[in-house]
Every structure is written in C-alpha cells, then in structure tokens.
Length: 121
Image (cartoon, rainbow, N blue to C red; front, side, top):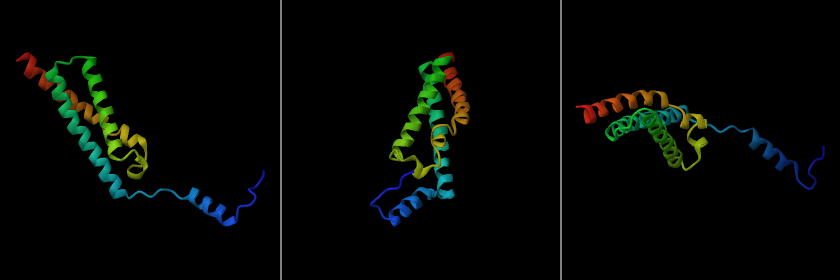
C-alpha cells in the first residue's frame, strides 16, 4: 500500500475524524418530523379516499390512485426537506414507507363511504 506524499499528517487526521463522525439527530425533532409525516399521510388518505369515491374509481384503479397519491406525498415531503433527507430523518424508509398501511385503511373507509353516497344513493 502506498501513502500520499506531500500531505501532512494533520490533514489526514482531520479527514479520518470527519469520516468517523456520525450525524446527530435530536430524538425529539425526529419524533416530531415523523408525527408530521403520519398526520399528513392520514389527512391525504382521507381526502384521496373521498376524491376516489366521487370519481367512481373501483377495484385496482382505486388502489393505484392511493399509491400514486402516497408517492406524490413522499415526493412533497422530500422537496419540503430540500432533498436533504438525512438532516431531518434517519433513513429514506421513514419518508417513503412509514404510515402507508394506516393510511390505506383510512383511504378504503372514506373511498367506500364517498362512493356509496355519490353513486349508490
């Protein structure tokens, strides 16, 4: 193995210290950010369910509408974070996947409710 010539040991120590540092995230801020994502997904699931019911979407079209809406929600959160996820969250999975299953149940509830009111009664 070769070493760098012409560079001082202090710059190598600084770079090795920078590599060993872990980003620090406040647990309270992380919890607040996750709460905001959960509430926004729940709210948009309810609104999306009502819209899907009014539009008369049935079967797979309704579920595809939900997942497209959740993808747009994730993209909106990422854009709000200025595309620097690791400053506000500890992983990408938190932004993309958290809250989707709970939101799906709300979506289906309001989807069927709005569909029944508009198209059946």
